[in-house]
Length: 228
Image (tube, rainbow, N blue to C red; front, top):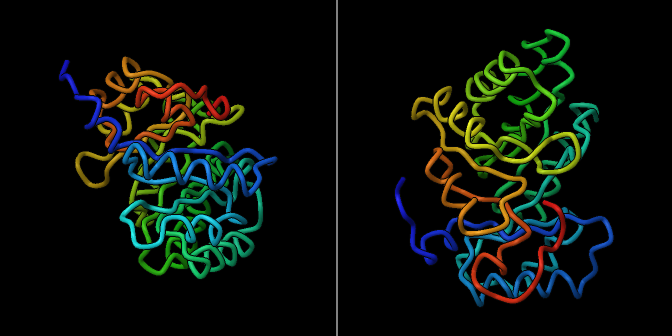
């Protein structure tokens, strides 16, 4: 197993707070954390993008947001409009949830078409598909990932990290890396709470880590912001 320095791991973290009760004080805190520790980016809900931009202006820290989240079942047209809105608001990277019930129902073409439309609306911004592996069979995982790649996604992501989406496992990240076969990189999310777990997941093939435990991993004293 390859060993990563703490600095290497920190630079791969997208520091996450997508709790529905987040306040402007919390936005300021995660942005200050990102500046202090040198995280790759902050991940927050769309309504806080402009607030985060005030704190991170002039830096190379990515402002990331999540849409179609946490259920994925909104109309495609709604997700497309939301994508346009978050791009206009200033998001650098967008993690979104497609309708995995299409995959469960064998509607793979409809699933891929939705992703294509959402990616197109991103207008060149980095997009990551939240695949919610905790609800999929092995066959469904492979089909969902392949369809997302074919639809033009920038990153594959095992899960939102919330609810039934499940936590990142070595096996799931290895599966994503295998399906991708070098075509797109992999982001891991869910249950990454310490250096040991981060190292395992990076060795499995992830290049980005979504976690609310960024400060804890970096050696700070804060507890995780959520179960994410």
